[in-house]
Image (cartoon, rainbow, N blue to C red; front, side):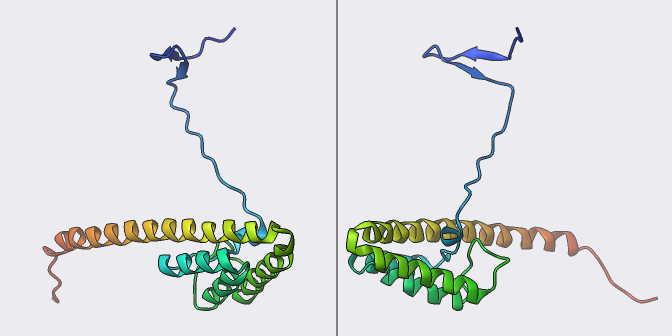
Amino acid sequence: MDHKDTEMNEKGVSSSTSGVVVQVREKKGLLRAAIPCMPFPVAVICLFLNTFVPGLGTFVSAFTVLCGARTDLPDRHVCCVFWLNVAAAFIQILTAIVMVGWIMSIFWGMDMVILASMCHTVTTLHHSHASLALPTLSLYFNNIVIGSV
C-alpha cells in the first residue's frame, strides 16, 4: 500500500500536503459562450429587461457585440456571435409560454451581470498593474543616456 503525505486536521479529516494544484475550467456551450462581456450598468439593465420581458435583454445584449463587447468566442466573426445572441433571445421568447423561457431568460440575465462583474474586476486589475509598471520602467530608463559619437 502506498504511503501518501497526509495529515489530520482538527475535525479528523485527512488532507494532502503534497502541493497538487487542480485547475477547473468550465466548458460552455455555443450559446452560453456567446454572452457578451458588457459594462456593468448595461448588464443590470439587460437582467431587468429579461426579468419582465423574456428575451428582450438578451436581444439588447446582441447589439453590444456589434459595439465591440468581447465574448468567449474569439475565433467567431462578430456577425455570427450577434446572430447566436439573437437566436438565444428567440428561444427564450418562444419557450416563455411554458415558463422555461422565462426562467432561462432570468438566468441568462444573471450570467450577464456575473460576467460583467468578472470582466470589470479583471480590467481593473489589469489597469492597476499597468499603472504600477510604467513608473518602475521609467526608473530603469532614467539613467540611460543616448548620444552620438
